[in-house]
Structures are given as C-alpha cells and as structure tokens.
Image (cartoon, rainbow, N blue to C red; front, side, top):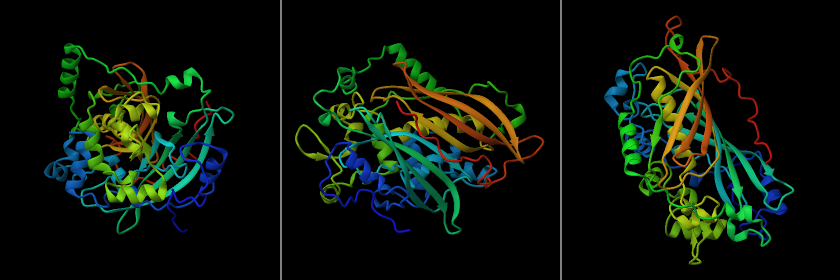
Length: 413
C-alpha cells in the first residue's frame, strides 16, 4: 500500500478552518490509507540520551527509566524506555485534512507486548482508521478521527506496541457562526488564573517529594486485592517550561511544520496553521503556550498537552506495579482542559484480577482531576504481575491475550 501525506488534498476549493460536508468527505476519502509521517517522527532509536530527554518531559523519576546500572540489575537486564517513549518514534496524532481546523487530543488505547529496552530501534506504520461526525445535525458539529500506529522493533520486525488515538477536530472561535449560542461561545472565553494559597503549594510540594515507585520489591498477583488504592501521582502546578520539555523530548515542532524556513514551506503547501491577532501564520500548537490562542481553540487559555497528561497516568501504574510487573494495556479519554498553572492528580484502584493462560492480570481504573475539581481524564489499565505460584512474567505477551476487537467509537453528544 502506498503511503500518502495526510494533508495533501487534491481539492484546492475547500474552505480553510471550517467543518463542512465537503471537508468531511475529503478526509473520509483516505480512510484506510497508510500515511507518510515525516513530520510526526522525532527519533527511531531508544538511545540513552533520547530516553532521558523523554522521561524528563514526563517527570517520572523511576530509576528503571533513568539509571543504566539499576536497569541492568533488574530481571529484564536493561534500563527501559518509558512506555510512552514510542510517541517520540511516532506521535500517534492522526488527524488528516480539514486545513485550519483545530486538533484536540481526545483519547488513546495502548497495548504493549514487550518492554522497550535502551538501544532498541523502531519502525512505525500509521493508518487512518476512520472518523465520526459528532452532533451531525447541529451547527456546532465536530469530528473525531481515529488512527492506529503499529510500532515494531528492528531488525526482527517484532511488533512491540499498538496505539489507537482519537483526535477531535473542532472549529476555532474565529469561524463560529454569528448566530452561535451564548453557551457555545462561553466555552471559548478565557478562564481566570488559579491563585494558590501558600499552604496549598506547600501541600503539593510535600506530596510530590514523598512519591516513590515500588521498585525492586516484587508485587505478586496473589497479594493484590480488588479495591486496593494506588498511590496518587501529582504533577504541577504546570508551567510553560514543562510544555517546552515535552516538545524537546517528544517531537520538537515537526508536527507543526518545523521552524523558520521549514515552517514557511510547510504552511504554504498544507495550509495548516493558526492565525493570531497579528495576522501572522503561526503554529497550531501555539495554544499550549499562549493564552489567547488557547481560548481561540475553546480551551479557556494556554493548556496542557494531552499525551503528556496521559503519560502521568501511566506513571501511577508503573510506580505501583514494581520492576517485575508489565503494563500490557493503558487507555484514557480526556474530558476537560487543564491550564498552565493547574495541578493534576492521577488516582486509581484495582477493579479486578484474573488468570488468562499462564498470565496473571490485574485491571485498574483511573481518573485525573485538578485543583479546580472537574475530571480531566479517566482511564483503565491492565498489568501483568509475577505470581508466587506461576513464576515471573514471560515476554513477549501473545498478541491475542486480551483481545481488543474494534476500538469503541465515542457516542454522539
């Protein structure tokens, strides 16, 4: 199958920044296509430097992801890359066509089959799986586009992970119709900056300093109880430096066309940009750093990066399971925007446990909130643990151990 660039529409008459019958049909015409991903790939090898830049962007201090000697002392015999390190191999963001329409990271469903070791090299294949029009009869309709990235390890071409990602395509405030309801316009207004009391900041710092991964002490399947609560993971208050660290470790500005001359060439070809108050064509990702651009995208101000928030949820799982466990699945749906200055709290608990063949599985439910109160994300994870009776976890995990089937589509709302 020939790969194509996701933004190479042949129809020059399509409107910019709008969701119309024509732009929806144009995107639908490439469903099932393998996409060229030149701008969505940052690294192809889990070198020590690359893995460190990534894990620093997550803020995960687990030594299995940071210390070569420690990694060699584990049963895996190597330091590991963080599970979401594969986002640096391919961002997983698949939102083709619809030039000028905002991308919103809406959710992801990860499955891993093996650990990611320092020194591994990877390939990735990205397919546009489909799209769904939300509120199809409403002037406020939007689209969720779903893509799948399959990550394989060189040279044996062994599949190590798959990720299905949902990307919301939402019109910016500059193209909302004049008769848009006040409720709809309210979503695009700036939110007030949260001001912390000194005791709140002290409590946040104390909790962060007290966080510890389980580490080398095995967590055996037999010892886990349904209802067991995972230690909370705290991230924040989020600063712009944290966002910059994510870009540096994961993708730079390649998904937005690059910098300087590269950006000019890209935006001329693909019409993928945000137009600010100055009239200058700027990066669509500007909303992660600039308040007004974030408001234009309906986020209420400069907001966090979805995959970074999801990676914090993964930390809650890997901290809990210990070095001898293996995170087989992690899925998350993002519900509300999280602004620069907000503090995120990921919590979770064990919802079930089962044996499937020789594998001892634990199922976990998670959610993220911030200091303002709303649920930012919810998710699920499946962990494979060692067993006192059955022995250590054996990798790679069979592809069909916990079948996915067809990923569920979001319900219309």
